[in-house]
Image: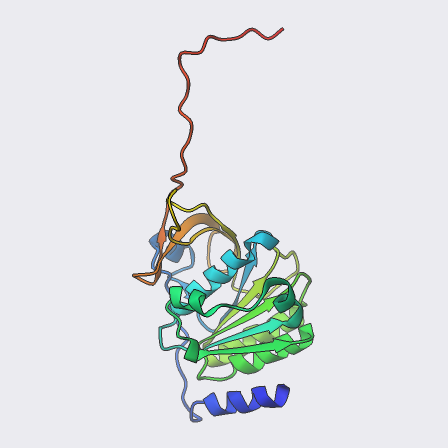
Length: 245
């Protein structure tokens, strides 16, 4: 498996000497981009954690939405632990279509151990033909040295490194941002509405933190601010006050 990954990465490598400016990746939402200093840092590590096990699909969807901002022609590496596949399943092609990501530009790698996942992420990040790398891990720490190596590898190529976690982490990290993402109720009561995400920016090396309710537009292939449109019972003014014994 490792030798096969090496061959894939060598095949994708750009000619030597090509250097690209990392820059910023705006999410297209002024309040968030302002908090991020203009957008997510390219060439950096960002952590996206699910608010809980049941919210992992939402966190994965948010990660895909962020990755798609790198461009529809970008190549994406998704590295996942075998245990995560057993418990959560593999990404579905229709889900990638929703976020405007072509399956032919996706490379998936499954590994047995955490150390292999971190190694595969690091190798993929050093490939200049790869714009984004998502590493999906189960609960547990990754260690500050491993996080630093991922940050350095992303900085070398300008790629976007996204660490997808099943639960919020408390371990130290060199990540530029840390997000906690949960699923939000649909904006419609009939049928399926657009995917909605309750997002919290809990760590931001470039500015303040915050929380936002976002909606993904499949037609525009971008996030947009959303509001809580769930019905709320009206206050009853005609009920007499009851005395409590």
